[in-house]
Image 1 (cartoon, rainbow, N blue to C red):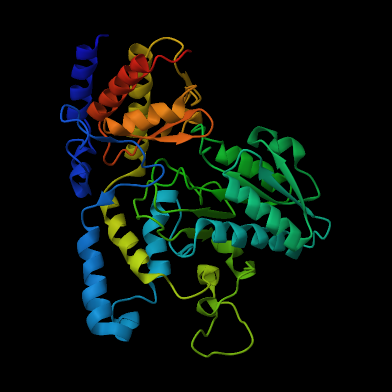
Image 2: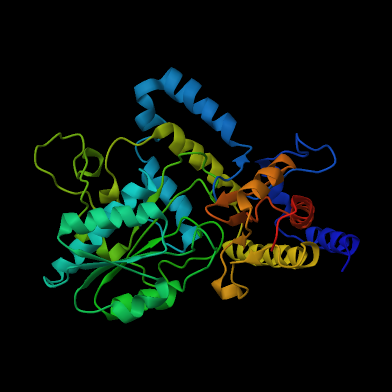
Length: 415
């Protein structure tokens, strides 16, 4: 097809998009500041989601009224104290969890630490003293690997890094816990959560899933697939804002045995009793640690309102359609041999991003951003484009591919 034909196709797809109306709930640039003839296209929601329009007013109320006027009374009157579990229940449907299993707070890294150490302790509570190995995704986001290594030292375990495909073959009587990423942050590859979870359980071990690049982009099915523990950030596809608090999922039947390595006063059964001995609270609350970060937490709560009435299945369908269309446009527009897609073609293996290998990727991304197409660069040679179905449309996709092709043709680089 020609560029004009792709443009017509994009218009038809946007006209039929059942999620198109959600876009109005976000603050998005209509036109790039850098190029008057090219509308801005934001394809970096897999790093930082766009701002939901309701958030500034909510934060203003939290600062001026709840903090400025009510002050300490807001812990009760404004619901500050219960925010971690209340907001966890807002996230729960997006990851396929029933209420009462997710608590919000701390960073993803801190929650990975809680979950991995907690998983090892669960394995040993089962009477499996010989379980002294933590298996970790060797391709994972670096921090997950760092945390897993620290958790291994703390628990006296050996760390075994392998690729997700190798996990079933290395599981055994020594395996205590397995830490895996649902979607590879570089390539956008979606790993098989149901089958890998089943394999870990068959070996008598516990699994921890990192959902940073899947929550809010595709169905996860934590309860349906019997996942033990999961963590995730909220500033990507959940649009919670920079540094927004992360979350921890603990399956309901494991909660009374979950032994957090970070017991804090807000996870105590009697937090205001100020007792010297620690008694964990019941349920997912034992995943809490210290005082909640109220400003960012309530900004996240406001951001999550854009999900009201939005089925995650519809989000997944649009995500696949967007990435399919982008790959189609790239194949038609970009000079042959100039880029190589690292993202799987098969839908069951694809998250909500497209990663393209390009020899001068850093410079190409810089020039794309100058033209209003915002993705990101991953060392050494990856162009990464995230597709957030709540606010990215098909015309955006066509325009991004066209500007990419123009940029590559003008760069003079080799294939």
